[in-house]
Image 1 (cartoon, rainbow, N blue to C red):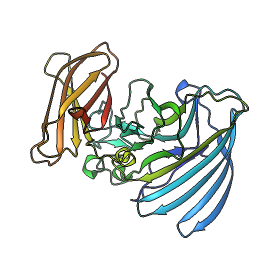
Image 2: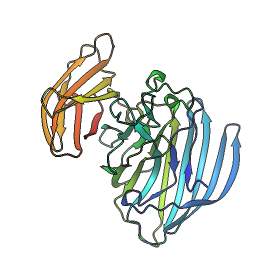
Image 3: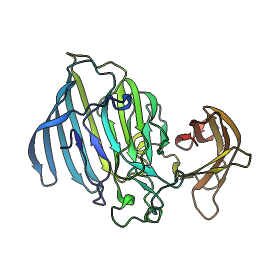
Image 4: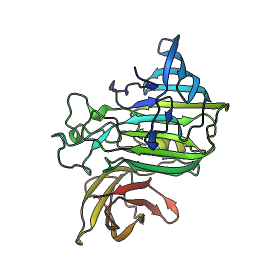
Length: 344
């Protein structure tokens, strides 16, 4: 009944987002859902099991193996797959995952629930081969939205539930503060492609409206054999990209939105956690369509390691505009590279 979706709980024993064996034409409006048709289970230890599964769909068929282990930090699964397209596939998504984002403190609108925030994941995180840790905070867009990040041999990507403060959710039923982070790391170089984030608007917590996946540049054609090998990690990690890259940089703690000082302007406030006390970082920004009016940054008094970036901007047109921002010291990045779509 679950097509090719699967999931595991966080170390806090709470289920959240789902992984997917494959995603086909997800962002093209004609999505296809191949399904697992057969399973074989092999007990391999007290806290481990290997699952074998056959996948079948109109456009593709294949076989999967999931070597699953439960440890102190949660569940990890080593996934090996062999896939055979039956016909050309316009958009093939590997290492796919699906989540839900309704709203947070920067995205509250009319008709929201009484709880301050509701989401299974709040950031798309990417570890690039060049050592950059990217953070794309998730929003509930006014229209279907695709964000594509061109990569070659990335170290991994995932959907992160970074905000783990119960007070920010006030949910004592399904505990959004305990939802797992899901990180996918390839076991072999991926080559050229894109990490894609597809999201569409929702007005409830019962619709999974966020999908992230790896889209290879090479086309999927009939008769071709596609091999995939990667690890998925169901954890409570807040900075999996930094862990994958082995470099500690400041991470996005919170994002806030409001109106700027000038008429018709927006204010975007990004809080970074993990900035060395006494550091005086430079504010680097870029805007896709519009004008950056002013930028400012300062340590938040009484909050060790917390640094606040304040951006006032004017959007061009009525749609979304992409903001990119980072904290730097000279030519060295000391924070995640943030991508944020600002809209009405």
